[in-house]
Length: 469
Image 1 (cartoon, rainbow, N blue to C red):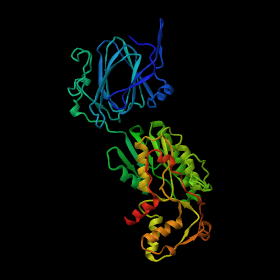
Image 2: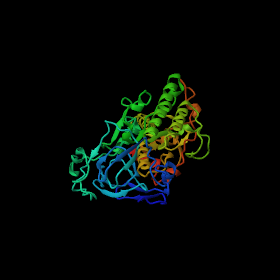
Image 3: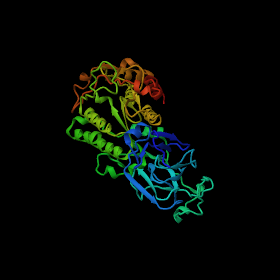
Image 4: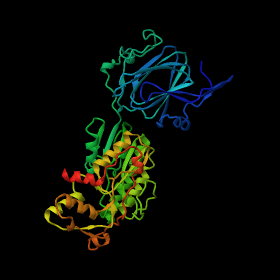
């Protein structure tokens, strides 16, 4: 008997992510009505905004019809339109809850959200039962499925009607026991731009796991057509875009301008569409160059962008595109130091070779080491910080490029007085070719990041360790 008048309520189960929902059903002498799926109300109550794309109905004539146990690589929202079922769910995902079991009855006043990888089965308790489920992906022969035998002794499901007497398919009877089941792995994480200095730091931070993939530009170029079908994107949970065109001065040339816009804006917009259409969390790395540097305080995440040059304009456009993806992190950083050629290594080399350089002293910011950016990105993902824009840089006192050069000279045993500070205008006065305008203030406010529990390292202290290493 369907219960009327219940409040919309979520009931957690022992299987992570598997949640029973009590549904309000309104009835009278004519019958009943319910909102079986109501996105605004249900997401506000805590149901994941899982993006269903298909609605399926399985009609069952007889009492005791039994189906399952099937685990698919998509989420399901299961309910009953007419009749009643005994439902059984077994966690078939990799992890500590593999093999966990939950059972309950479902009638029109109850539903259950079944996350990807949790095995689903049911047995009808009333005739003419209509079993309804929303899914957030289309069936594909390329998708990975996992099955468990309905009579598995380890799961030990207490079926209300003996499996010996019910209507059941031969295929379901032939599924493997739990000891022989291949667990469904986590959805994948993809790092784009894996050969860059940040990409290499992300490889060190994320490690070598089967569900983590790294792609170079040769393997996945955002500027080429066909990005939407370059991967089975529904299999991905997170995409981290560490690829970009970063030749700030080169972007001011006609050829560089076209390349910068293609890589930093058009390609990023295509990636944002992929993320939005496939429920992917997109992490995109941005820059202090989206600001003009005119403020006399650190830039916050909500300050309006106002880029000076082509590079900054393309990065700002990319940020705007990424913000259209429902699940996104835009990570703004500045003065990046990692593996390969960089300012710190150049200064150390000049000091060793006896060169006394002129270094800009009217641009102020903080160094940011790539392992700190990688660490910050992983923190945002694992802590499930609210989506949005976050500044990630080194901490401590803001300094100029000339100040950093003097620190490098001093810490490598050379006289810091060999550094001559000059203005940006004087430094580039005799330069050949186009020169991009630089923000004078590149200091980014770190309060929002620190409020998530992330520990910001002092940039000066990290510089010392970097030079020692």
